[in-house]
Length: 86
Image 1 (cartoon, rainbow, N blue to C red):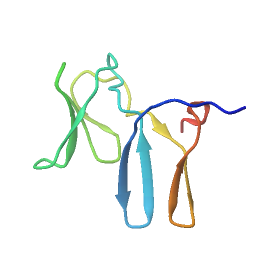
Image 2 (image 1 turned 120 degrees about the horizontal axis):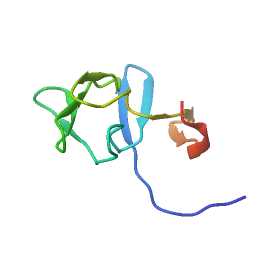
Image 3 (image 1 turned 30 degrees about the horizontal axis):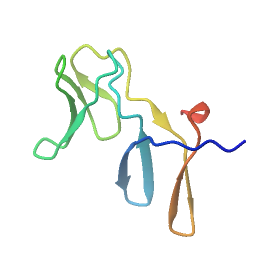
Image 4 (image 1 turned 30 degrees about the vertical axis):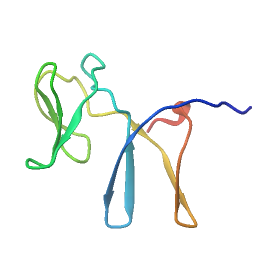
């Protein structure tokens, strides 16, 4: 099955490890942003704060950021379909 569409993810790299996060807060689904000065992801709706590994640092989010499985091949990053959230 081939599915075409537009979507986005947040990618983080630590050494040779790449993580892909769903771009919506786990509290109410608001889009969050990266705060470079604090090195955290911040949701502006209810002040949810997540670490660069997706863990909840503060606020009301009930769980870490949703992650997608990632496959690295020949210098390319492949994000596996939504059914493959980690």
